[in-house]
Length: 150
Image 1 (cartoon, helix red, strand yellow):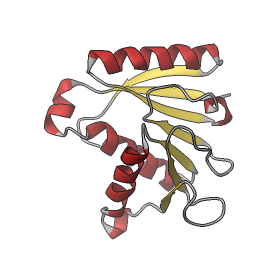
Image 2: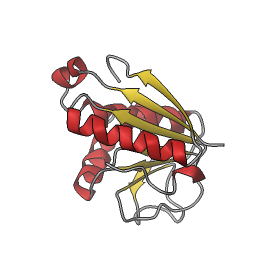
Image 3: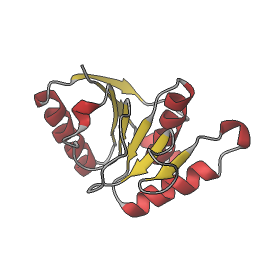
Image 4: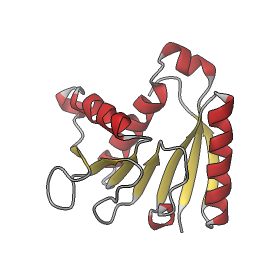
């Protein structure tokens, strides 16, 4: 059964770091990798995927996370694969981190889904729609407050 966690992001987090959701998603990918999971990080766009790729390359060597954009890297992808809507990830992965506007129809193929509830009202409504879509797909749902710093 798939389980999803929606992390609630508040104004203070985005005021301190306007890219907090992206940085937090990368932090969650690193934690999942350290726990031995293969991760698919679904960006909202190709530009955001490239931004995530660059951010992960800038980490300290001790915090390096093997990653690649979909279609690059080794056959079957590296432990953390970054894609965007319209692409297909390469093979079995246990964790989906969703930064896209919609709930991907393949979310049920993962054991864990991580999603976000931003503070912006329009984006919050999109998160509610994703929550409903996951629930209709039979995914077990929970919410949690995002930490102050990723």
